[in-house]
Length: 394
Image 1 (cartoon, rainbow, N blue to C red):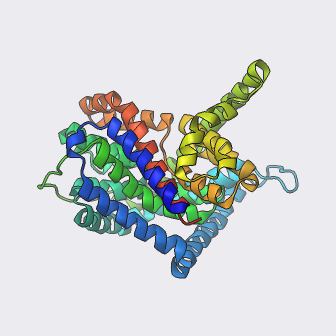
Image 2: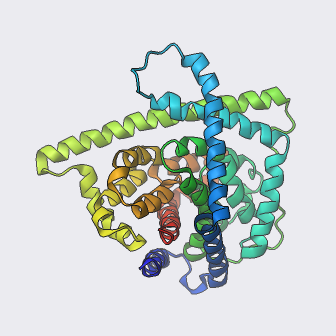
């Protein structure tokens, strides 16, 4: 049955991608096959071999250890706050550690560890997929640096990009998540799904671009070097990353307050008017998609509702909802949904990406705004593809 649902999930992704494709006659099947094969290898090693499973456990343990270290700074600043016994404050325990992780990313970027990893991983990915050097570089770098910072690493190239290439890098930005967020995600969903999803999403975004936005990569690219902050004093760079991390945590917190309050309002309103909650209603809309991905029939409405919530709000709000119902779902449903949620594919991210590109080039920002809905659908399809592949192993 797992193989059957792999086929149904892939068919769903391809059909929708084909329907919105800008050039159906030139879909890049060879690149798709190579990237999908790489996804199968990665997912098999990570989820179906003892070495891969132990490696994922080690990575998860490392990020949990980082969260403990982050608690030192959080407790120093907020330790005087009274929290009821056994209680937990989401802002302090999940969001504030982003500040510490962001500082670590800044240090690794400054000493050129991240630029080295990004450059050569992007080079290897391009050799396998033939997607283009800039596209492959960006797909890897956005999974480490996040947005909007990652756009600054290619700011000289952005004004020169064609509309097709611009779509590809924006799709990668929406489908990936930044390293600074991983530890916080692991506080809400199992770490192994977070790590696997990070790897698979890099490739899923490129696969979707091969369907939705096919084109032949330019041959004269040079791999871009990440130069942000390297010519500035160390503590200035460190301070910038710390402040950026704090602003990110505040922004996420504000978005959660607004979105979750809005969903609560809609749920109560719909219950009073039509005797069905808003989340249950959208759950029925997304239930067929969940079923085709391999979610067991008894879970498809709940899973569909959380999938839709992630699209409408953000991944943190959806993960919070998943935490509350995880015990009611099967292991397979938890695996598929957890992997699906690890991306920035939501309405709010469109504004971030459009604003980031527009700040660099007003003309290119207008292009991004024009294909924003196609961008959102493509990034969502990438998440569906990642969730479908993960579900094969449960």
